[in-house]
Image: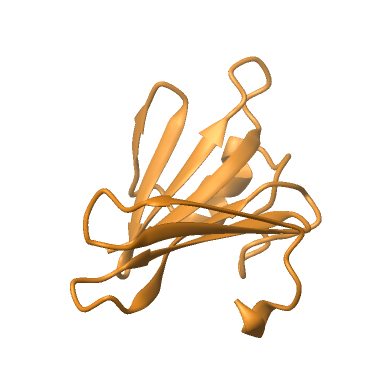
Length: 112
């Protein structure tokens, strides 16, 4: 994705939804996945934060506590198997917690 600068890794696989390729662009600290729509246009389907060098607009990043996440994103979430799932606007944000320390070790946002 030229708008984001040079990526450090790239992979692709056939899309499970529409004809074309799902593409994963990995940058320093995050990755962006694009998918084709029914017309073949590429859209961003997922953004994943991979390190504490990148944060969401509200300051959420790898290593913050569950309490910090709730303070920033609210208590309207579902939780199962260490994953807190928020429905925010037109996306689903999944925060994966470390089982032993209860701090965030991965976050991913899926576009609808």
